Each structure stands twice: as C-alpha cells, then as structure tokens.
Length: 265
Ligand SMILES: NC(=O)C1=CN([C@@H]2O[C@H](COP(=O)(O)OP(=O)(O)OC[C@H]3O[C@@H](n4cnc5c(N)ncnc54)[C@H](O)[C@@H]3O)[C@@H](O)[C@H]2O)C=CC1
Ligand SMILES: O=C(O)C1=N[C@H](C(=O)O)C[C@H](O)C1
Image 1 (tube, helix red, strand yellow):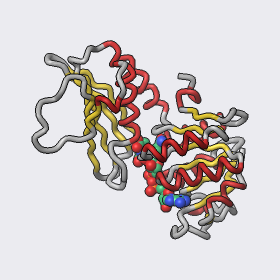
Image 2 (cartoon, rainbow, N blue to C red; image 1 turned 180 degrees about the vertical axis):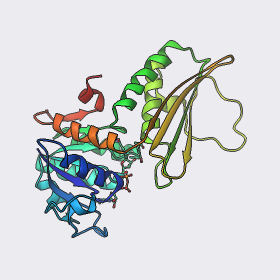
Image 3 (cartoon, helix red, strand yellow; image 1 turned 90 degrees about the vertical axis):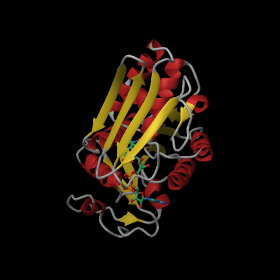
Image 4 (cartoon, rainbow, N blue to C red; image 1 turned 45 degrees about the horizontal axis):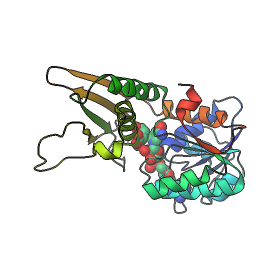
C-alpha cells in the first residue's frame, strides 16, 4: 500500500514515517509540509531519523496525495479539511488523526466521506478505544448522582483543549447515560460557577512538559469515587494504530469509519 504523510516533519508525521518503514506491505509514496515549512526539500527518511529513503518533503500536499492509495493526516484542522477535499477529488482514502475541528470543518469531512473511505479517530491507541467502551458501560450502570469529570494532561505544545480524546470519552459517557454530550457538557470552569448541576459532564485540562497523553474519567458520588484511567508513554501507539487503519481501509466503500471498526470492538 502506497501511503502519503502530510505534516511529515511534525511529532506524529515523523513517527508515522518510522512506522511505515517497519510495516510489511507499506511504502512511503509522498510526504508534505505546510508551504512555508522548514523541512521542505529535505529527505523524509532523514527528517524522521532514518536513512534517506528518496522521498523529498514537498510544500504541495496535492502532489504527495496524488502519488498514494491512502493519505494519513495529523496536521491542523484547516489543512485537514483541504487535504480531505483533495483526496476526495482524486479517489484517495484518508486516515485522519487531527483534533480540534469546529462543526463546519467536521461537516466538511462528513461530506468528503460520501466520496472516499475516511477513517477519523481522536485517538488511535487500542487502550483508549477499550477505555471508551468501559466508560460507556460504566456510565450506563451508575445513576446521575455519580458526577462525571474528565481530566486530561498533554505536553505544552498542544494547541486544542479539551483534547479530542477527552471529548470522545465524554461522548461515550453521554451515550451510556443516553443523553447528548452538548446538552450536559461543561468544558471549563472559572469564577463564581455556582454548584455543580446534576448530570453535568465536566472537563479539566492540564498542559505541561512533554506529557504524551493522560486521560482519567471520574465517577464521583457522596461516598466513593470510581476512576478509569489511561496513560500513553509513546506516540508509537498512535502511529501503529494509524498505519493499521490505513491497511484496513483497502477495498472499503466510501463512508466515515472509526477505530472501533478497525479493532472490531
Ligand atoms: N488521533 C490520534 O491518535 C492522535 C492525534 N493527534 C493530533 O494530531 C495533530 C497533530 O499533532 P502533532 O503531530 O503533535 O502536531 P505537530 O504540530 O507536531 O505536527 C503538525 C504538522 O502539520 C504541519 N502542517 C500544518 N499545516 C500543514 C499543511 N497545510 N500541509 C502540510 N502540513 C501541514 C505542521 O507544519 C506540523 O509539522 C493534533 O491535532 C493532535 O491532537 C496527535 C497524536 C495522536
Ligand atoms: O496532541 C496530542 O498530542 C494528542 N492529541 C489527541 C487528542 O487531542 O486527544 C490524541 C492524544 O491524546 C495525543
């Protein structure tokens, strides 16, 4: 399978290039960066800390995508929408890991998925996807006197909050309670907030250092607190999930898929 990596010199881009190099049946067909990116013109293998592989990083994502069967995108929301549109025009499948898309950008991805298969997941790790299932089940078993709070911590470079994973965990909890997340969420708190309403799903965001990703879902009641927690120690877990997802997309019909489909959860 020929894979293009957009955002090739980013934290995830480099990890993905290394993952492709060690995965049988995959090859790097193209690599791109933002048009003003410092890595443009450099060898993608070298940028990822490997030997040169002959793929030069281009500032023209359309050219990188055109050379591939599937494009993997961990970039920024506006670029992800632009890349999905290019891929949809050219019949190239898409794996999206980018988080922080607004409702309009989300609708654009749904639109592209009518033309090509797209896998989009806020978190590609097996552990987090199992956690989502556990959170949904737990929320369905505990009544709303158990306050749900979701705490996440990431590295100081992260630009969106709460994390896409925290929001996805919130969605799992809301599904377990058979409510709509948007009707009950409190994405941050500040000042004179008043007492906590019953049924609210709260979020708290920490940023610092080089933390890869920690998510804890708390169910807090008067006499006890249940916590379900996950910590990532390396981005490799995301990269291997993304490449697995790219391989899984082969031969799929247009549509929007998630990691649950890939992992059979
Ligand atoms: N779904 C998952 O499992 C995971 C998702 N993420 C998400 O992936 C995204 C990227 O994360 P990082 O790699 O840490 O960020 P990063 O900032 O290290 O990398 C993003 C790269 O995209 C590049 N880029 C920006 N505009 C571009 C354009 N128009 N064309 C090509 N490249 C462009 C940037 O120059 C940068 O190198 C974030 O939204 C993050 O939340 C991160 C890790 C795991
Ligand atoms: O930016 C990151 O690093 C991560 N982003 C994703 C998110 O927003 O949930 C996935 C993971 O937590 C790492």
